Image (cartoon, rainbow, N blue to C red; front, side, top):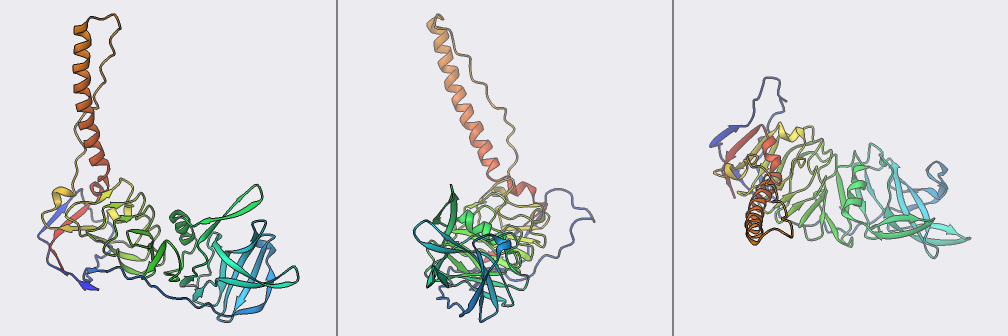
Length: 358
């Protein structure tokens, strides 16, 4: 990791009044760092399955509990698409802090001992025990189960599906995807697209300071949803857009370092109230790119369409007015779009300009 020196602030701009009752969260003093994209790239070795397993009818007619030598216990749905059997992870329990989901389970099907692929994550709400801190996901577990007309099918997991699975593991601080996992990868516990161009999800129990890896272009919607243990967030200059509700319910977040001179697109709802009451640090001399006043413009009115019997001069005046209307409408839409796409920064009560040095 390459260190960045943080020099004293050269300007402190207060946007909005700050009272003595404002949130007293201390601003972290840790040095800002640059994180290069290096995938975990591990080949996960699952613990040995204990031979006996049991039905778990409370979780559905096709649910079974399997136990492993490291103390982890996993409840699976054993399903079929009409031709093949597969298992979907529903709940993770047991005494193990660090869980590895296996690529297969061994069970008896039609009196034959069979290896069944563990193909999908289909977790319940609060699907993990409080003691579980990390989850390793095998390369086989990259599908989502879609059930329609009593027929089960597997479809490649989307980023939205992955985020939903992460949200059901509130105590987990780290995810590790096997090196063979397609389309997505993990680094320092967080989940990215395989090329690191997009941040998909940060585990909710991630602690301390989180830095988005260099080269990331987009922070997806709800990527840092309910990350209540993060104190500071550093967003590199490579990030061009921050999705809807990307940083919400982050109750300890006191500092956002934005390293780009040009403000990334960030919508009105990209950051939640906890971020807004924290400190936003931006590069020196870039304040003009982070403060956007709502345009003092009125949406133009389209000219009335003439009657077919009107003389040519009426039609000529109409077309002239229509050309002017199109120009004014384009100006209005462009100004409103610029404001809307950067509206998040208007909500920060404190903005500080600093000099970031690599």
